[in-house]
Length: 262
Image (cartoon, rainbow, N blue to C red; front, side):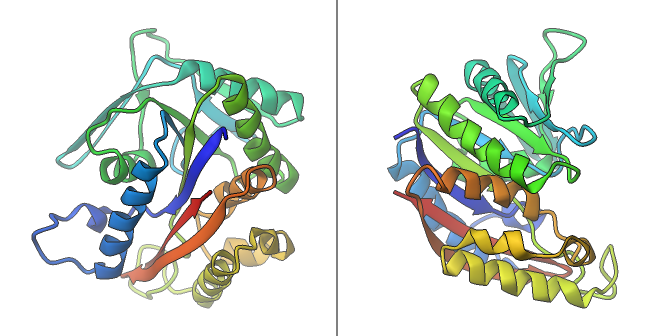
């Protein structure tokens, strides 16, 4: 089976607090430990990551095809090999399906792909020894729903072509309007959106997302919708089953954890 595991992982900075100390996110901490066990049990040999905070190309999905990726966040430093064969195959098969794709190469061929916190935080918690190669993609919110689903479909085909056991990390925080004193202010749609997302994951029915209104999604101030549709594309071809692990709010934004296993 080409895709052996998938997950929805948040990427809040408080997730990196030392395990032997207090945390404002006790449920998320436990959920990420469960997620890591599921991840390791699936025995992937490469990781595909969808991040909302990477290099965004207008109305396109960007994907790194450099040799290495590297990123730093406070005391965290992550370096990983890029699985260029998988990344190139993913881009090729997506293009064949009509998905707008922008491969990312650095001006300096030795320069690494910059890894944002949507990549570094999940990697630090799921693959802390940085042993697996990665393929990193970032969808623009201007990419259509059908194209986002096709992006997931293309990952399945690319994984088959390259004979990879792939774990897909959907790096995503939920609504960002849970607090009036938060970065984006208060938006009642954030809690509504988060409940709807949690219900869809619990029911193992991501197709519900196709019924959601674009204006409502925007008002919810979420960064999860677009990546999660690509997970739906994977599920349409690979029988991954969801396991809802946790949901919490960290001051102003929602964090949802879920594992998808065979």
